[in-house]
Image (cartoon, rainbow over all chains, first blue to last red):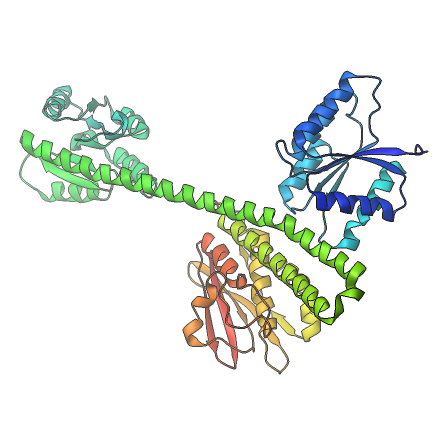
Length: 136
Length: 372
């Protein structure tokens, strides 16, 4: 059973999309705690921080955008899969590109779900269902 | 005088009698060039592969097999390269036999025959002329390489730009949806009209970006030809993608026998999709009828897509293939002006040709070729 308040880390620099992710979560009545990290470097520091301190709780889910400042989302994913304590946490990779190579690379690096950010509001809300599935 | 890496401008010497080779080397040593003696034809080929400005070959060093090897090597040169060769012919009066041999040697490639006994000045000036020509070839190579790099950069740029532009565009689209949903009632008639203009511009820009992406993608098709595929597959896929438009227009589509051709599936699909899509879009009042067919011409396959639409005025039959070239307003016929440019890019990358024949008010026939 899911914990009463699951925690999600969203690695995303684009505020307009952060808002939409919140909307998607709200639309599916999910009780989650959302933490935002706005670039790839900080995301990697966050992961190392969890590895270094066993008492720190690790999140239940990562949502990672590919296009990020400093270090891109695929590199963050690779780092996450190599980490001690975060390697098995589900990861949703998000991007607005429909590039075939991004999809393939995300799969190879161990993404759980590839979410292509859609161009419509209603379609974006389906992200909520994807998140719910990961906690199912 | 010839400043280049010494490998690229060296003069190879192949003369079976060592004394001849040394004499030639001495003659060249008086010039500012680097002579390099090859012990035998095999060694000479190995050195050629590493680079050479020209080669001085004694006729007697070349038996018929070696002549063939030379021809094969020379015909495999990259397009910029046409290595000049200097051949010292046997001495003596010209005979039928020597003329025949000279003719044979000419078939090798870029050959200058020097008759023996040759004066040192003759050899020197021939070598100088050959190196000068070679130098020019290297210059062409450099500018071709620069051009290829610039092209690749441009493709990469178009690719990244269209990807990166999608991101903010998506947000504009979504947030105008939200504005309409949450504040639509208080916007009034004028405000709602503005918002719908924003929405339709977003849709149009999205199509434009995916067309740009397809164009950049078509530009980066590699020079290597893929194995042959049955053209019928991509034709079916294209018609399936257009199923909505076909049904809506009630178009009748006839497809003739399709051959196997060496082209990537997705590229042929894109070409047919754009051509058939146009055939349906630029229709007249009467029922749409489109015919797809192919036939073998001598060295290539000829494909065509023929419609009974509005046709294209004679003066625009070439410009329609240009990027962003359109003949109609968006209100009359929507489009980005990229479809035919993409087709042309793809077909030309496969060394084919595309053109249109048309009768205004009667229909158009787009034809393209793919090498067999």
